[in-house]
Amino acid sequence: MGNKCKAVTQEEAQAREATIQRALQAFGSGTHRTITAAARAHGIPRETLRDRLNRDQQSRMSGDFEQMVIDAIREEARLASRPMTRPWPDQVQVMANHILSTNGDPEPVTRLWVDSFIRRHRCVRSYRPTLPAPVPARQVGCSDHEAGRRSDAND
Image 1 (cartoon, helix red, strand yellow):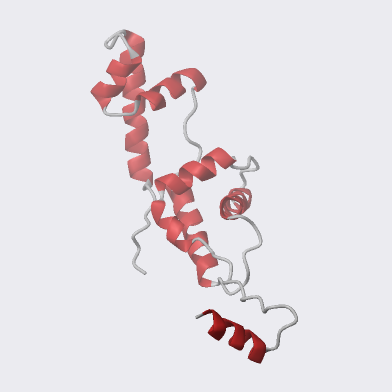
Image 2: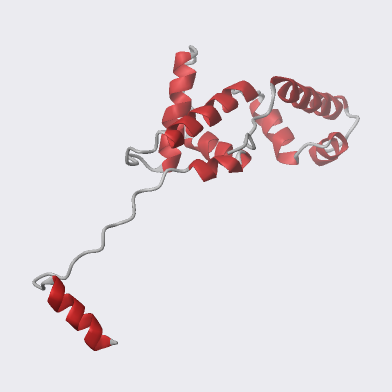
């Protein structure tokens, strides 16, 4: 598989953050009278600008972090001989939290972050582990010969 799944680079994240900050300054200084006008003028989603005004927070996960999560998902898919033990979003959350804690960030990611991550990086869906196909159940109390005869009679 090619490297179609690429996270945002550090430079792209910094450029986006600078654009968001310019939009916030333009709104705060009165250059734009509404959040919608400021967001539209700077080419960012209105919800992003509104959320930043309400929460005043910057994304704490870098593009490098997201690339590490993508790489961990790929590695998990490569080693997919073991059965799936958790639902898919839970596996992504465990991987992301492990990477964060390894890098000294004790605050775990939320399920909302996981859902957004999967939405941002649609290519990770192709790595989703699947359970093995179920084994067809045999008819109880029938020999193979009788089961075959019954299916022939139904044809």
